[in-house]
Amino acid sequence: MDQVIAFATLFLGLVVGPQEVEVLVGPEVAGVAIALDDQDCQPSDKSPWIAVCDFGSWPEPRHLVGRALDDSGGELGRVERWVNVPGSPAEVSLVIDRSRGPQESVARLSWQSLSSSSPRRALVTLDGEPVEVLDPREVLLPPYDPASAHLLRAELEFADESTAQAEVVFGGFFMDSVQTELNAHLVLLSGRAEPDPNEVSVQARLDSRSIRVAAVEKGPADLLIVRSREAVPRLREILGREARSMRTSNKSLSNLSTEGRLKTLVPLADGVRARFVWPYELEDERDAFRLFGTSDELTQVDGGLLWLLSQMSHEGGQLQSLADAVAVAGMNAVRHNRRRAVLVVISGQDSEDGQLDAAQARHYLRSINAPLFVWSVGSAQEAGRSDGGQDWGEIVSVSSVSRMRKAGRDLSRQLARQRLVWVESGMRARDLEIVGDSLERLTTPD
Image (cartoon, rainbow, N blue to C red; front, side, top):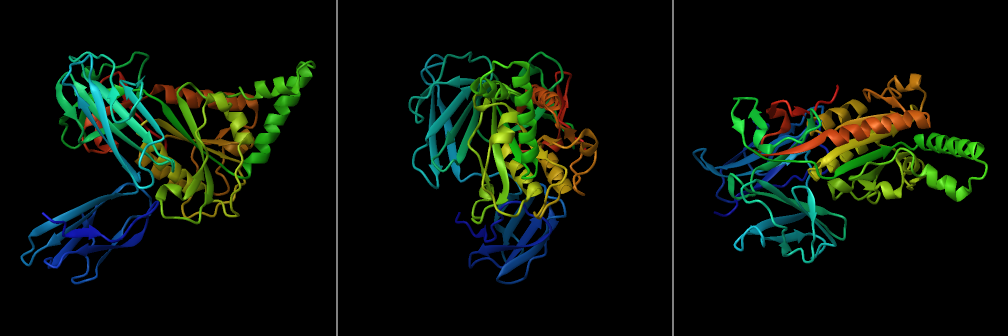
């Protein structure tokens, strides 16, 4: 059947408040219905087909549906879109060829990208362990136990830094590969033992029906960092004070040795990949994930958090949009379905010129299950107060190296406890309940 309805309105970035939504329809369409989260938006009764939908005061994922109707009100076709959720300009599909058995199975990848015909990097993992990729079109899998369920993930990165990922669960009670309605939900380990997916139970909150768990995965972690302009001088002061202390306690220490020690302070944990989101809006707003520039990916090889926070530089504009950048950082953190956290570093006297405030950004990150950590380079007394009228919730002082070390350990501990539960359901995390003692729901304080 030909498509008879499509959205004409493109939503870039985060959407709040009343917004016009327009759809385009074919000549056979007599009317349209537009609904946001099952609430009728009352569109016009003729072309142009426009409705005003209220996205609310707080940014969170919203489900938009447009339906094309005939003369009797019957449905001719429909179009759906999630708003305020991550997306990607690239796509990848993943199929497993098991015709030669579990010793010689092959993963076949195909992809589409708006900017590049071939990926510049391919990462494939089986149950969290890297798989060698010689040719991303055909990846030989290591031997596996066909009686157990396995999670195969593929992530491609293209020249414009866009990425795409796909997941397949196979083996065990998954006699065939599962590629549809497979979603990852972030949870926390309750103890030290890794949970057996066969013993993890997930239920729908609405009707208590059981949701099949495909896999429980650790994998790498993403740390998205938003640092205010005003925090930089104080961060460099903390670093300089520590450098002077090192030289005083060991007068034979060379500048090179001092720098090497400084770079190890507040280290990133193994498997954590950090990226800065610069809180200065770009002029080109065609891509919702490019509203704010980002740094290259950083690991523990590049330095610890104190070094990175004080030394990473970016030439930004005059206007600073901290809360907006935090919300976009959350979108990027969730997009890859990995362990994740957003770290905000403020001074206590930060300018704010964005559309969102801190409370709205926090609410959005809770709605998409992106943990938020807020550090202040001010004193402990200043950290306990809201930042210039901005409600950032719990703020931790990192005004000294010892305080930053403690805050860094707390951050690393939570990332280490995080796991992804893959389930056969399109339901959101807030609609699911973890049953059992091995895992617990991730909760973020208001």
